[in-house]
Image 1 (cartoon, rainbow, N blue to C red):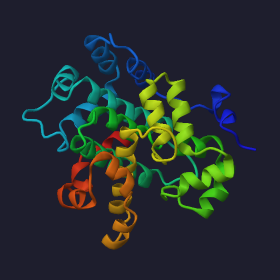
Image 2 (cartoon, rainbow, N blue to C red):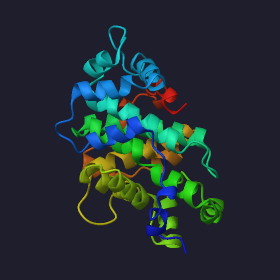
Image 3 (tube, rainbow, N blue to C red):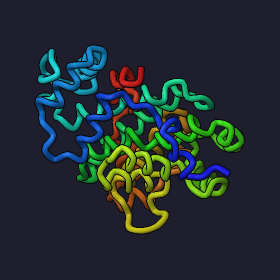
Image 4 (tube, one colour):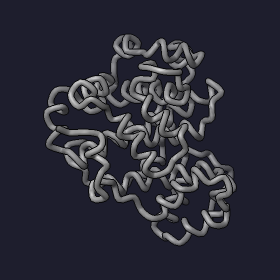
Length: 276
């Protein structure tokens, strides 16, 4: 029987995150993280440096001048955003070749979710960078489940698409836990702050139990929007699936989102190279 403990009890089962990303993960819990130290760690990896500079100069960030160095990127984009970009690249590397899941589709969905959730966070007056981090990581539970236990996941995948909004409930029924729980446990293992792990656990079902977590709600709502655009869902069906109670908790409405949020394909222009 697949259990949450069995997914994390052996080092060989855990995703191999690149060393630079590992060090930056630790900085989430380090209030004294040094600008120069972080810049030096990134600069020491020429492939990562080139990718990060390409991202920094992409249409997504609309910078007013060319960003030519890692120091420039940190100053122009901010430490937290640069760290998020490196984290995204590290996660993509860790789960490259995962069986049983369409990684191209999955990362497009993930980027759409991140972009939508960050936009929603600004509207809800939340920490947009923290929401970006949680959005980046919210799908790692699905990836780890497929990497560590592909045989157990195959019959679940046959019943319901991995990106279906009802997927967490099905996993809970079959395994006694869902992919949000797996993502939270990985966050604890990587020593992310409690706020990140708590939100990751609640993203699939933010109204499930306990106090409402607004950052989790933003990512949940962003995922709804991402699925709609990714699968070209008809407007009527998309509206019917709208998480209205979650939106109400955030002070947001379907009409406001539909009329104000830009197309996600445009907002993620350039960011896809993060997952190459």
